[in-house]
Image (cartoon, rainbow, N blue to C red; front, side, top):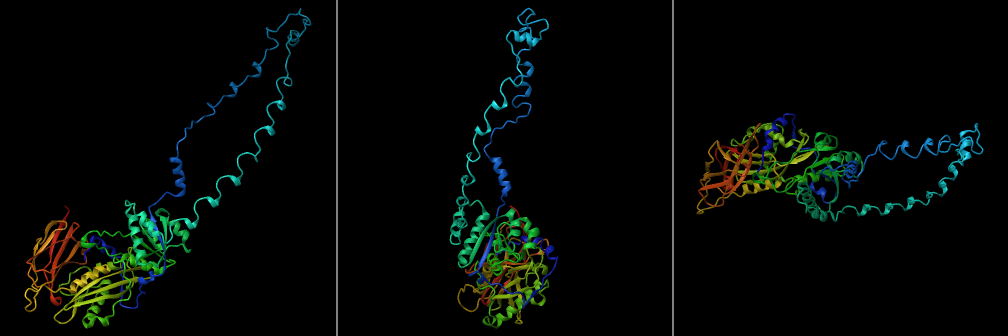
Length: 557
């Protein structure tokens, strides 16, 4: 089992905020995966932020085919009143004009005749406003003869556009039903450029296969509309049980406290020290959810890398593990309780146990709200005994109104010459399949028998490379002289952080063949930092010899 421990650097500072006390019994009720067998679940899948409707309308205008418009002011549009038509003074000929004037000797003209009388004498007639042009009543067309009436123009409201029944889709034809969502997801996975979507599709398919009887309602929600949608859906049957996907920053800075349940942080391990290929989406649990039990079971399932864990919550029957197993289990349960309370193990620790800060142990109870969960229930999941060596898998369960989650510590114990079991190793949080791998390996430690004459004695190893304190590039090769007698070599390693040594991890190296030298690539040393490591030689009946520690400083390539 392997683990990346970069998180340990600043963890101690966070843990100083408060403490939590684990309970041996009478704690909160455990949650079983069986709640997902035939239940119901509302999952809101968080998508990338999209523009809201008003923003889309504005964007549509900006991206429409451009039209050419020219702005016209009153000064340059049409003609001004002074340039249109003729003024009264410029129309016709004045009666006093010389062109129409006549002398006093003309017929009907005397010396006392006026200009109008003189003009009339030669055939000109003055026009009054009443006799000139046309009256308003005779000009143009009456309103009743112009254009169309309102009833004959255009279309009535009943014939305009499309009726509501022909527009869009009905609710029954929109999206996917439960029977088709998996196929739709498979088709959508063609878009491989979106790792978040790929991760969501993977979990949807895993969930469908693991719990075919679970009735799941998926709702896509853009990240920038999550707050509005949560407020609108609160108290309705549409309210989500869980959120899955890239949660917006506002969730961690305030919304989690308002809407959610703080979760225990998941185990931060990776296979062989390298990033696991399985994509895991972010998840949030909602308080006052319509399907609270199913929501909590879903969170456990999603964070448990074996993806099954149907028996979680049942524990092991200690009467079935023998007297030694029951004694080892009791010591392990007491030890993890003390560690979670921030205490040291005292005389429960093997003299060779790898040391680390008791405060770091409380990191198991650290929540996504950056606080420590309160009381926890301790459950023994499995016990294995191989002579002088025992492995105990536990489950730490927090289930309260404001905090929820599970962690899976693994303790390795060694029986001393006085017959007492003491803790040799503690891995604070592993997935169940990692727990199983270690337990099975430690139980099958018989060495290769060269001649079959008598018992094979574990002789231990001598570390060869790297030298103590040496600098190496990432993932160096470790090797040691193998003196024989072991069927399993185990590299125990720790990383130095700002708060000191992180909890130790185990790297298994099977030793099924006789050889004088063992070489292995330290794939867990993939981050520039200071590490320390040593080798266990495990033989028949759990007989174990442990080498001294060596340190190595890993530098970037």
